[in-house]
Length: 292
Image (cartoon, rainbow, N blue to C red; front, side, top):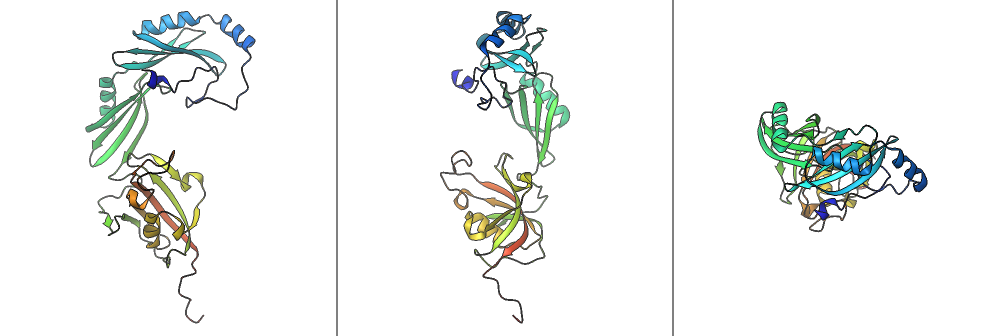
């Protein structure tokens, strides 16, 4: 239980993703004392209300300021799980997960009636969620629901590989282990080799569909020499033509190896990229144009 709660920091500073906000000024203890004393719902009462709503053992309680309203956040353990209950310090209204896993499956099935791959709960999210992954008509549907009321908060569809759908195209497998699928065939020039400097747009995915890097999201194409990137890119982008778009499936041996990149890329990670070759910025190895 302790390890699950280690990320919950007892703080009066509200932070959306659960991490401490070290940029905020320290709270005034005298002011907070007065605010808490003026709350119609006390700390003790909030715990009582939370347990009445979600029976179990209270393992942690905290106060947060949400838009000028103090709320009690209470973590309750029981039946092999933990739940996050929020109590409004003014009204005493209790917000708690009402959905169990069976209910989450029913709500997801109402959206996509397929074969379940997994249902994962994050009871410490704000709001708590269930995320279901469902196979349906050759696609993987990822459906995230609020555990409080069952509302669908996101729904995405993925084909065989993360990112842009490849339809029924089979990947081309190269001797190196690199695989690729041409999404759009380019009609322009092709880089002559590793010395070529190219401009691209790309989005990188892990095998679960999570985006770990994207020039598209940043709104700024990337430029680099083909010899200065991972081997999978050197080979995969090096055989593209300008105007083309390709999905690269890069095994860890051609990416960041068995160690990965701490904090960014897990060990032995197969990486998936949707890459668009926008232009060749310079190409010292290219053959000179006729007549020059």
